[in-house]
Length: 98
Image (cartoon, rainbow, N blue to C red; front, side, top):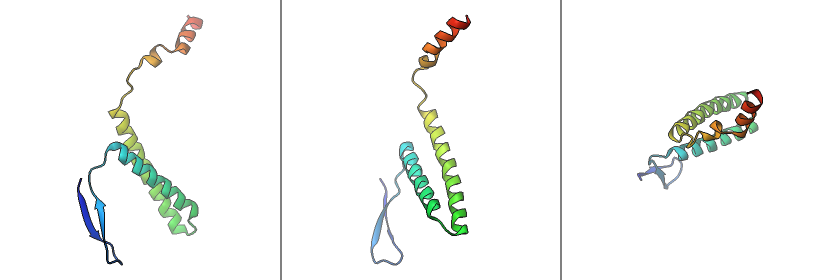
C-alpha cells in the first residue's frame, strides 16, 4: 500500500493520503458514495451554476458506475445458466403451447 503525505492549504499539518490501487468492488463502492453525495448536493443547490455543476457530475458518475458494473458483470459471469434452461415457467409454456 502506497501512502503519501501532503500539506493541506491553510493548515500547519500534513495529511496522509492513500494512493494504493483499488479493487473493482472498492471502485464501485466509492463511485456509489460519490453519486449519493452528488445527488445530495444537487438537492440542496440553489444557484443555477451550482445546479449545472451537479448535473454534469451526476451524469459523469452514472457513466462511471455503469462502466464499472459492466466490468464486474464480465468478471463474474453467472455460474449456472440452468435457471433459465430449466425454469418452471419454461416447462409450463412448452407444455401448454406444445
